[in-house]
Image (cartoon, rainbow, N blue to C red; front, side):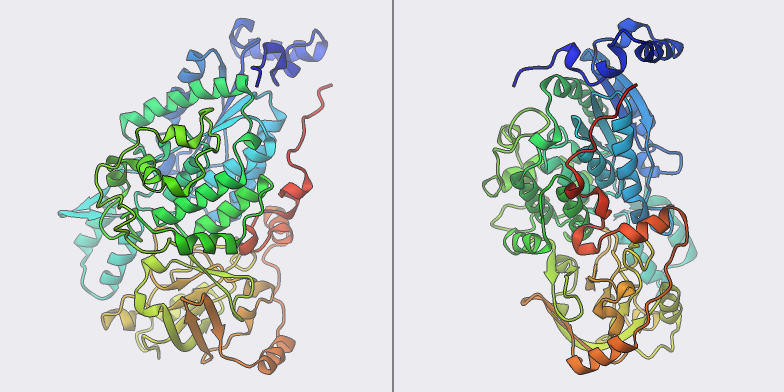
Length: 577
């Protein structure tokens, strides 16, 4: 494909014509202190930065944006930094998922409405990756993703700590009376020691690995720890590469394909991915016009071994160890024959070309196919009369004794109700019970919160139990673990079958047959259906009001109906008058 010339640049529509409007654009750039030599005839690169002072995962992005801009200048481009919504997991309430689509809309409209020839997307914390990528896909200009990178491994009293996973673990020990105040405070201060995303294979590392496997990052960029000097070098390389992508007109429609999406799903399964991968990958794929389904993901999960021995699905290591062992390039090299290596990447090379020379340096961290952590992939999709449109479970991260389980349901209609009950040491519950939380889906939560790893009742924790079957229409953190069935669809809040389940009903899970059912006859379910009353909407105004009217269910990716590719592959170019 022929390279663009200066007059072909998208930004030339703003700056090139000899008219009053372009005079205004050029004069305002001069007001900012730039001469025409700085920006005329050069690719204008938007650096979309999700840094904020309250997002610890991105606390290094203020400096990294400077590294990107340096690279853009080195390659002959002109960079403009733009702030984007910083959706963080720790502080954004009621759920960061409520705002993923807001970030996607902001990204799309920011790109479309400004004279950007290409963009570098700076994200990493869970929802920033899919939100930025979804918006950039719909905008259609060349883009490259810069992942924040994982933080350093945690430490306390000689123990290695993993973010999220060890928080749940030690909280159970504290509830059981095995941990005092001093140790709890030490764990609190040692579990997150640097800038960067969770260093377990949580949602952040899952989504940046998926973006890497899709070919949207520089090769292996997702594995570099946030505070490693290699992350600075990668950032400036992103700046250099995006300029060439503009001249090459390497747009996202040339990178996204059935093959690249399948590659991403296989890599996700092999890494021991977060269950959130399901919702986000489906949404990203559908923005590109690729109809990825739950059944597609389950089929790949059945045949893809889990080979990344990284917590929580793995037992021993964290993302820093994964990087030293060869990172994502090393993992993809192990499964190269399962991937479509002809897929194009942002480098302008095929995936196969970017894997040349990749090695694994520690085969206990990145296992060979002959010695996987788990013989199937990370996720399984269930169906049955509780979840006709599907539900998700992470088999590798739960006790195998729950792969086939039958027990009575204990149903909660809200998180506060459930939280109060589990703290009650007189709660009438045994280890074979099935805890159920409903009204926690996309509309019911609201915003599909990460409540799905329901805390075990204190009474059971003090008896030594650490896992039990739990079911909800919520999500759970990718750092979580346990026998948790999630994303039940349709959700109970809109009348899904979970709304009809009652305490005492027998629930049966059969993982081998991918089934989840309540053992209640159809006539009784119909009677309950007739008696069910829809709850009041969660929102009466604002963004939440719009969200609840347009968000799709979990099995469809929770995107807004009017943002899917059926409403147009891209938004088109704005008029300039």
